[in-house]
Length: 162
Image (cartoon, rainbow, N blue to C red; front, side):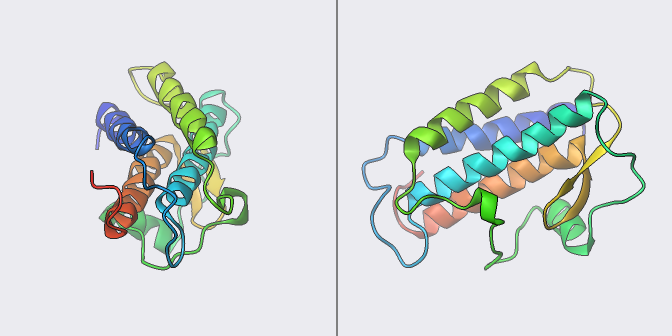
């Protein structure tokens, strides 16, 4: 996938998440996370992912001697995250889901995406806490895949419809 398409896919997924923020039933109690918690989590993960892209762009990424692990490669290739995957501790949402935080994070991420150079990303990579080493393009792919994963989980909650 070309850089422009990767950036567009990430931005489109984040825009879909932004469009859900004002739905009235986001905090409806559920078994597991409610929709607000999914939105907060995906926004935290997106910030962390795009920070990795900016570290790479600043020339401070790792050399590309490692790569995504087997599960990471499968996620990036298939565009699907396995059901039941556990979120790393720093990306877990608050008890009810902080929509103000989600809104701010999503706006920040979309701004960062818009600032990326139109011609592509610098060489280098940064580690994902669970999935191995990702280069900048892989991080962009992960943002789109991860965000859409949580949007699908929100759809499965029956609230809110997209």
